Length: 340
Figure 1: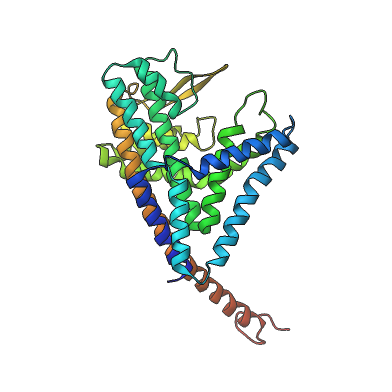
Figure 2: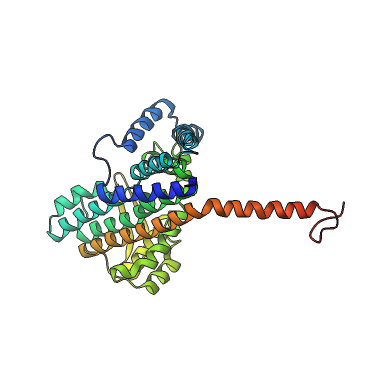
């Protein structure tokens, strides 16, 4: 078993663990990382970008170096590497928890229990729920499911396939920092810039892959691929985030709803363009969004496992071709070479 196969096996096993058990209820490593990052912030905080860059470099660099050391130590031990990648994948994925929270929200809205639904919204996003009605609570939930399908499922799998355990740990560290300091509050407007920009960079490919997989798997929830493709192509760049609009527009098209509008956070308000052409979401759309998120996760796992298995042979093939080309280029009289 090569390292690529070991990584692929670990990704599949970790995905299965998340699907079966969800997030660990106690001693979650991501929560521990968050506490350590908060303590580091207290030491390094200054209201400028250079302090924020140093903070992001330390908070991300240390766990990545530990992961690199672990990956190096298991280079010749594929079973141990697969086990480490499985544990890392289970730690950083959040697919089951995301679907569970959406299901709880949908149930509360179907029962007409707005106080319970409002009290549950902070498990999904940071909006002020106090004045939200059922359609706005449903919209917030569908938008959160769309965005977090990328952040909590597809992106970790992509970076795990590309870089193994360091990719998993590094991505989750960056994404956690973005959630902590990457927003536009007075305290973090400059300090959180590095974390926010790094998170945007790491999600450029996963968010677009999430959108494409949402379109491909739309029929699993009776969605229309053609409509999803059309809405995504038209509306994907209207969102202020370079990545969220990719996922949300594809979800809007797949479900046949209209997302976007005025979002009220604690202390500030944002008005975002509409995504999609349908009605405002209802409780029934939340169930479909959660099911579609699960379908996208399975498809992303297939992509990630395939890439991890084939990446090393592909690199070896390309390296061999490059060596052949170089040797021919240096050979006097070679048809493809240069005479010296």
